[in-house]
Image 1 (cartoon, one colour):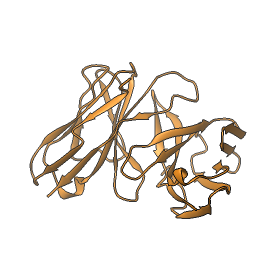
Image 2: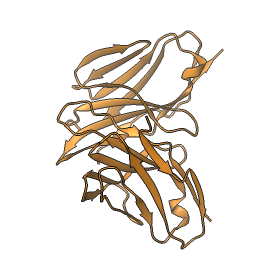
Image 3: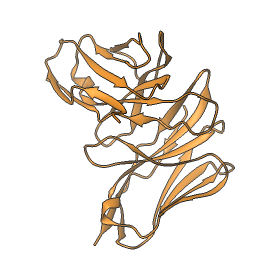
Length: 115
Length: 113
């Protein structure tokens, strides 16, 4: 039972480089999310998606892009890496429905350093 | 600005004691409340969620919600060293077609021997 899988687990980038953080889930969840977590801080929402072909900005979208071509995959793209993007990135997913539950399930995270 | 506030701690409790973690939120439209545990270097894992006023118990954990006062708390009974972690409070308000979570910065709990 894989749940939410993120790759890579660690990465070091040089300033100005680009990369894609991969996220895939096998729970058939429609909702997917990308967060970043800086040391000693909570999670900040970067982008989210409510289904294939639909994405929207969260609190801190600048410097990032996403796409959602399938239900399973939600990659996060950094086009011009900057030191301020050094962080731990978490992908999460949740089911739809109007119930009060539907908690978000998290991947193991990608630790990204920009030098 | 919709906010979720937690005391960063650390909250230190002796083994076997009750740990009480508190969280306040500013958005009165919030509907669901979640407690996540995060060990150092790991991803958040869900402990409990609550959406009705009152208490909800699950094993050694009890979540308490008071919507009038806009606070939610987590009690951990018979605290164990393995409970030492950061506890994140998250609040969900329905927004359009998505139900996003707003996270607090977390309270670090230390259970001492």
